[in-house]
Image (cartoon, rainbow, N blue to C red; front, side, top):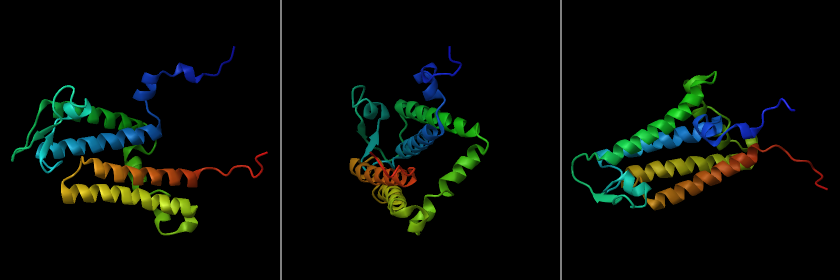
Amino acid sequence: MSTEHSDADKTIVSMLLNPSRTMANWYTGIGILGIFLAVMNILGLVHPNYHISWGGLLTFEATNTAFELKSDEPQVVFSDFIFIGLCVALAGLGLRTFANEESGIAGWFKSIFINDTWPALVDPDIGGWNKLFGAWSLLLGFIFYFYYGIVNTGWVDVGVYSVSIALIALGLGLLMAANAPEGEDNLD
């Protein structure tokens, strides 16, 4: 009988509640974005004409309407609290992973800005052309999303998501290709 632990011992629930560093990055990013959007929605700044009901939006209007006409004052509905709670829990799971590491949450936050991706914006010798174009695509995706959201109050517009996600996904793909290890020359 082998003394090695198999991956089957790790259940889906434990993998979701104890995310790896990569998954913790996604949890934290999505959670923080959700909290930001929820606060903007309460203040009436997420869409130029509508207040979003997160319960309706996330259930494809099975529970209630997703878009309600917005008023001139801040609007708070029950689904806002549920959505904020879910986003806080998601971000908390990610941040807990970083808190258990040696560098902590401060080290994770620092790694967002100080890493090997951003110097490649100006020098293709750092990681090659894949890393240069990947870094630019990633940066342009984030800049486009925030610029469009600020200028047009369109934080939940399908078009801005389409363009931003395409640029960010292309950037992440190119960065992963640049960081992939070299293969063998002979594939026979």
